[in-house]
Image (cartoon, rainbow, N blue to C red; front, side, top):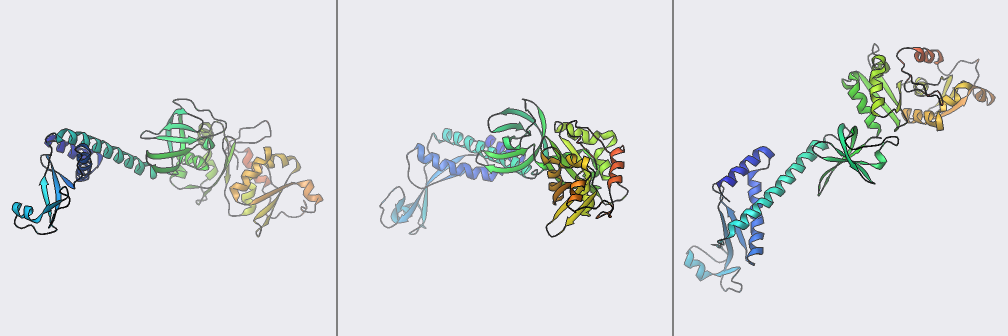
Length: 388
């Protein structure tokens, strides 16, 4: 090694943030092993690298003793005093034993150490960058796939999209550009491992943050998300300012904002409902697009009995119970849905009596007919992408 090598280490310190002294100490430690391995030496040695010109010297370290049993590790007091009269018993004497051809071995060893340290530093930098991106969204490019993962290039690293985190209605092709939610960042012996998801509810939340400025700046809040990836989702939104329409903000002018998210999720239907601290109103909103006649609340059991018009029962329940299931996940309340006629027969509902709360049917009808409610009709059961 020479002064050019030392200058290269200085540049490396500046560019990669790897301290020069740490690399030199690592090279010195590696050269000790290289010396013993290549020259079949078992004695204690110390390797010293000159910090100015890069020259390398190897010193054998021997303990000063009365009687020498192992000349590789010990030196007599008499021999030590011949070298320097100040030596005493138990002192350590260093004798230079630098081999003539040690420069080639040193250069090779130094290259290996520097390469390893640079790789470790780059991995550490990548890990530091991505650990702060957990529960965030990134855009990547599909590279390849096998039976376990889709491999997605995120720029500095290749992320893993497990089968269980893929959307069931989505196919992935080479060079497809997709947005994914980072679920976990782990340190491994081969570098940072990034796990991503296309089915996580957090992906839907982050997509709305990207598309809706009012959510990004905090004017509108997403308070809950319920998702069955690739099929249908519900989100509840709220704005503290009464002059702000949180549902309208998420839908966007002519539905452009929500439609961009639907397109990214390959046609997944999205219901946007207004959050309310009133259970009657919140559960009614969550069951949209169906109309609700009454909501009977059991606070102790955290359950509700919802009464809907007979012709709305299938819509309220949804295909395979999906609408009711998502509404329950969204609100955190158990929801039991009964038709108006069944509830009357069981004595659970009297149409002539006042509802548990003011009837919201008229309000629901107005919203369904308004320009703010973006509806994409599903001919199978009259479900919608979004209403409040």
